[in-house]
Length: 208
Image (cartoon, rainbow, N blue to C red; front, side, top):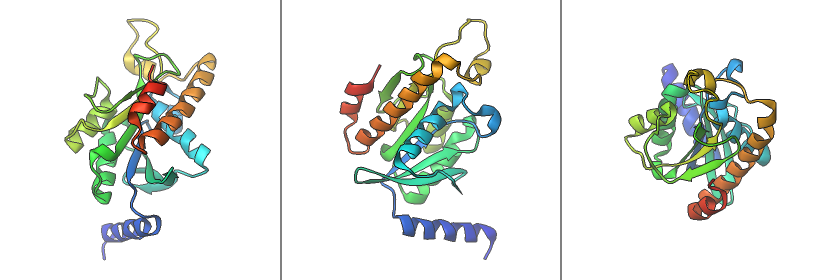
């Protein structure tokens, strides 16, 4: 038995223990300490906040990312933080979807949005990448735009001439931390509604 066969067997045993998830919930970001608490890692911040509220850990290395299991309401969910770097996020997402035979209509993705002020949310049922490379990767590798997403505001560039990469890789200012913490709490509340089929209710309550 080769090493890949061993990993596949471990995945099957883990799936049998935890049961097949009904939903894949993804928070996008970049791995590494240098990217912690940066704007581009808003998806990581949100999924970590959900895990903390539910007292679960996202610490199993699977599907090119860190994963954890959680039950929201009566829905089993797999939490995933891709470790592929943002531009290749789809590699982790498609592996998890294929392994559990989930369609993209049972995929929820949280990520940063520079068109929204820090702390604001916008929920969408589907749509294009809108210039976000992590979402672009997911769309390209799944072949579908039909997945729900929660956009988390991180604020626009303070100066037009500022490089966008420099902005999204910058850390939040002290006065932005509280709005971001509130946004993460709201994102968790959105997820609890969305996995129960209440996306419209979530949009009505939390869309900015």
